Amino acid sequence: MQIKINNKKYTVKNGETILDVCRRKNIPVATLCSFEGLSRGGACRLCLVETNKTEKLVTSCTTKVCEGLEVFIESEKVQKARRINLELLWADHAGKCVTCKKNRMCELQKLAEEYRIENFHFVPRRGEMTSKEELNLVHDNWSRVVVENDNPCVSRNSEFCVECRRCISICPEKKFGFNNRAGDVIVGTPYEKVLDCSFCGECVRACPTAALTDQNNLEKIASDLSDLKKLSVAVFDFGILDKIKEQIKNITPEQNLEKLFFALGFERIINLKDEDKNREDEIIKNVKTTDAKREKIDPRNIRTFFISSKISKKAQKSEFLDYVLTDREVARLVRDAGKIVTGKIKNNTRL
Ligand code: FES
Image (cartoon, rainbow, N blue to C red; front, side, top):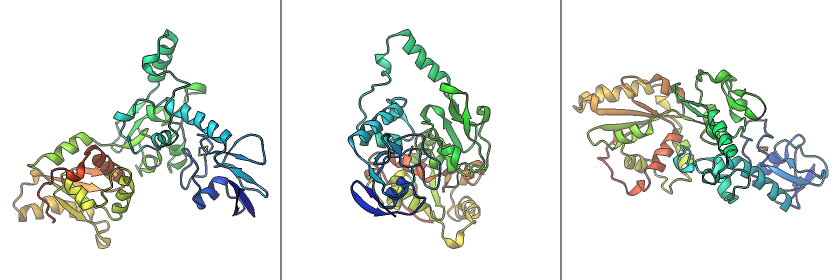
């Protein structure tokens, strides 16, 4: 069957949504709640489009294609509605970006920049609030914020949640859902208990903002990396290099990962190969035992980092493994290091 998008004809398959077709044909549509591999959407209403089938705007992620369909992605009506929906989402976050873990890595921030959301029509900025009612309202919102850092792998902060439901849909163990009722609804774990699961990390990967992030003390890591008395060794998991490149592409033009790692303060890099699969524990142990002995280095002065997307590894740190960093956390270190490429480079060597 054929449909028209922005007056151009496209051949489409039965059962596809308008968004499926747009993605297949590389036609940009703003989205937030929709995520690769998830069928559920319809929550953020950013993907609104106009069609010839109804007066109302429809969400492209849930509307299936049909015979004779004509779609307009960027009509005036669409742009106005999308802007309002984005402003409503953005109003909750405004002003928090500078200190946010996901600064420059956040999907909502990117959309707000793209649509130049600068005015606040719905919520006054903190300094603009004068009445007692307004201040009470803000206090009420803050009292519902849930921050949880008690599990070893995932950090939760509901202040950044945009209720896109990606975590609810993607979690294979169904650990997330809605808490409270009516206007007080927030996404969280049942009764806001400490997250307890196999820590596959899918929820962190899917979260568009900083509501779910990798658990770590990046300040301590950055300080260890800059300590010239310590030898920092990075062990790259198999297949992680492409993921890191994907994460840093908007942060730095530098795509040479070895150069970036040395500039971050790592002195040694071990790249796991096909044949090393499932041998990471043994290889990491060797760094602090066999290799340290051979090179006459006190193992207490060696810091080992496993760079992997397996966030469950964070729960399995040992005397041989000091830190587990995901591709997202590497990107944060690169971001925080600023002019990293010209930074001080320690003695570059390889094991
Ligand atoms: S992407 Fe369609 S409603 Fe969110």
